Image (cartoon, rainbow, N blue to C red; front, top):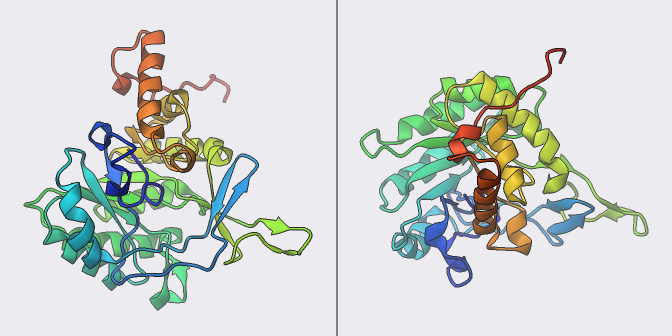
Length: 294
């Protein structure tokens, strides 16, 4: 799957990527009203990844339904709308608009946003707040339409297991993790941050070992599908996430330098399976083995 924030709204890449071959597209995050995002510079390439402070710039959910969704409906690939807000009511309103539209296969909640009604505490950092927003989102979704609710967890917490359990208990049908790590890059000559907004989110190969650990811990804690992401750039990377317990994977940062990365990675995963004489990728899921003394 193509991860949110790295693949635009999906349809913009139709001329360079065979979208129908993707397992799924997660749209750029959608908010209640259009947002301009953060001041430039917004991206900074690190030694083994990148930092971004885009600020969730987007055209707003109504413009998405009007301008982007009709073209997305024409392709067979499932489209998942990434949803965010700064209060529970924001999430509910975005979902209400999307529920009235055709062409959305499901939703991914970005809960790495500060709740302005609770002093800026991030939804994903507190089990109670997380349960509140997930429960409200689940209630806003029609059971008849059968659109699953994926909750995208933040890695900026002490115990990912607690957040995974809180999300599932509140109604999450699946989890995706991890989102970016809060980070800071400094220009030593100017003594100023490299990003216009100061702090940014670190992603790419640098975070993969930590993300793998968190995916393993979450998959051990819950019984819903876990979607792994964080630094996936090769088919073997994808295999590692499946071994850790993921049911599926999302490709994110790699899309910035190679928009066809999800398709290439899928082909590389197929080659890995053939090399290992494994008939189906699902056979890898949750097969991580620790030594007896660990």
